[in-house]
Amino acid sequence: MKKLISYLAPVDLTSLVFLSLLIILNLFFFARVSAWIEIAGINIAVIALIFLLAYLAEKRKTKLLIGIHRFYNYGIVLFVFKEIHLMVHAIHPVDYDGLFIAVDKWLFGVNPTQWIMQFAHPILTEIFQIAYFSYYILFIILGVELYRRYTIKDFDHGAFLIVYGFYLSYLGYFLLPAIGPRFTLHDFYAINEELPGLFLTSWMRDFINAGESISFSMADAAGLVQRDVFPSGHTQLTLIVVYLSHKFKLRTRWIITAITGLLIIGTIYLRYHYVVDLFGGVLFFMLTIWSGRIIQSWWEKKAN
Image (cartoon, rainbow, N blue to C red; front, side, top):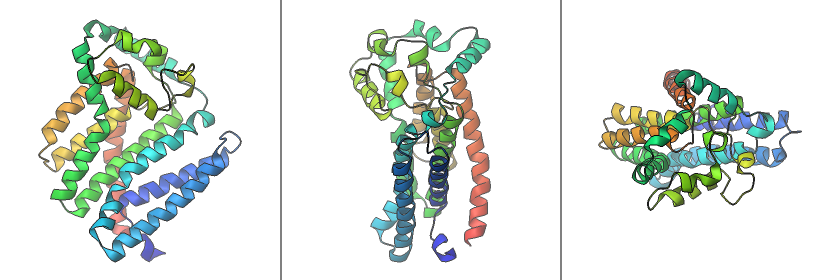
C-alpha cells in the first residue's frame, strides 16, 4: 500500500481526500440526498481510477499516460462541481443571501450590483462577460505553459494549488449557501434586456447558466441553481492563477493578470456575486496558498 501511495501526486491525494469526504457526507445525510447511493458509488469508482492512473503513469511512463495523469484534474473539479449540486441544498437548505446583502449595504451604503448599473453599456457588458467566461481557459493556459516549459514537479505544484483551491471553495458553498444578486436584487429573467451585450454575451450567459443547471426557460431557476456564491471561486482561483503565473514568470502572466482584473470587476457588474463574496475569495486565496505550502511540504517528506 505504501508503494502504491508513493505513485500519487499531491493533487491526487487532494482529490482522494475530497471524494472520500463527499462519500462520508452522503452516508451521513442519506435521508436528505436522494442520489446518495449513486454519488457514493461513482466516487468509489473514481478513487479506484485515480489509483490506477497514477500506477500506470509511474510504471509505464509513456507521454500519453503521464499527460492524462497530470491533466485529468482539470476535469475532475468540474465533475465534483456538478456532484455537489445534488448535495449542498439538500444538506444545508438555507440561503444566506440576506446576510451578504446586509453586509454589502453596511459596508457601502448601497447594493453594489445596483449602484454599478449607472455605468452599464453594451460594450462594457461584452468585455466583462468575455472576461468572466475566460475563467476556465485561464487554467488551461497556465497548465499548458507549465507543462511545456517546466518540470513535472513545478506542474504538480501548480495543479495542486488549483485543485485544492477549488475544493476549499466547495466547502464554502456547503457552509454558506447562496444564489447571488442576479436572483435576489435583480430580475434574473430580464438580464438580457437590462444588461445587453453585443455579439457573444447572450450565448455565454446561456452556457454559464447551463453549467449551473439552469436556463431562462425554467420557471424556478432560483430554486434549481447551484449554491456557489460564497466565496467567489472566480476571484479565489483566478488570483491563484495570477500568483502562479508570476511565480514562474510565464510569458502569459500579464495577459492573465489583465483578464483577472476584468473578471473580478465583472462578477459584480454582471450580477453573479456580492462584494462580500470577493472578500471571501481573497481570504480563501490566502488560505489556499498558506495551507497548501504546509500540505505539500508534508507530502514531500511522506512520499520520500
